Image 1 (cartoon, rainbow, N blue to C red):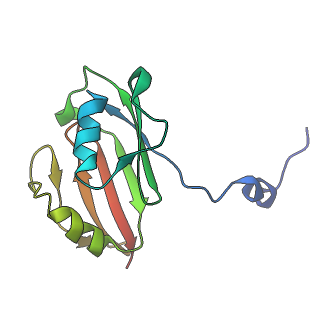
Image 2: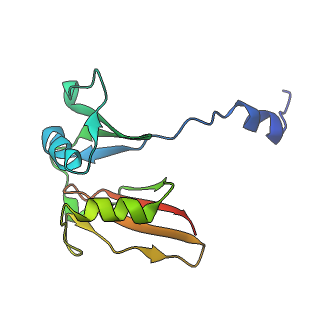
Length: 134
């Protein structure tokens, strides 16, 4: 069996974004929550078969139905790189999410590893952090 070099394998990886697929107790409620943040259903995505695809700019997030999900014990996490975490945080602050509980939005912070970021926890307990290199 011929072994490929790491460079050859990396050359086949596309520069397309990764798309998180997260659980939701109800995809209709997830859609309503994310629409307040500016996400819209991907054309052709109607939540059929309890699957939902949403997009805001170049960020796309998918959800699958998990009616028995317990939001407080969810461990679903996704980090999404953005150009300007400050501007996104300002825009979403208008939704007035609390800083504690579920759902919530955390304050902006500069991490020791050089990322300026904040976290959004949706009503299903999914944690999406958004950040840019500081």
